[in-house]
Image 1 (cartoon, rainbow, N blue to C red):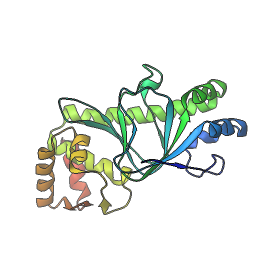
Image 2: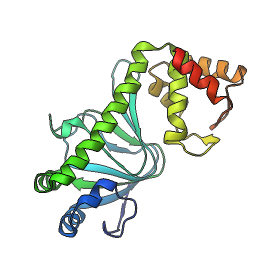
Image 3: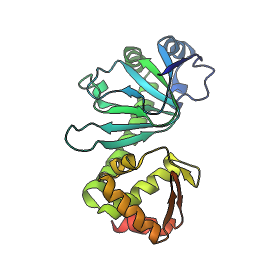
Length: 230
């Protein structure tokens, strides 16, 4: 069960950089309309189809965002590390979440009242521009990774996924994965069986080692070459 954390926004060193564009009065208003929660691995932060009532900013841990599919396996569309907020287009379109967000590690996140955020954007153009710039970067990255699903074979997909995980998601090396094999498959747009087969081939070729949740990239140049060739 998630736990409530008490800490003020002004003293917080983990808030997203865009909030530095707010005045003291604006940051105090956000603080008064914010709840900080601690989620444990597997806990749902919000669910696809649910009403959008808050904007979520991840301040510690790791969150996976995925599209639910009642027939096929879920597709992970992004992983969110601190300090980033989770942008959902449903906030300004359908007012319902377009995907599900789940903590994959012990994760702290701030939930800010959506109407307060919208009001703040209207009153502070610099904050709005900063928000749009960050969202644009996220969308461009998402488009680039989605092109992998349609233009590359399974070896290229897995290579891209591994290069995405380190150092972008897991800066330490070797990597201690907090994602399951099924998560890695969903992140690559393939079945778990196909993922395991490709990872086994990468191990045999000396590109990676994978023991339990401990992943080490042994030959990054080879991995980048596989990514480019698709």
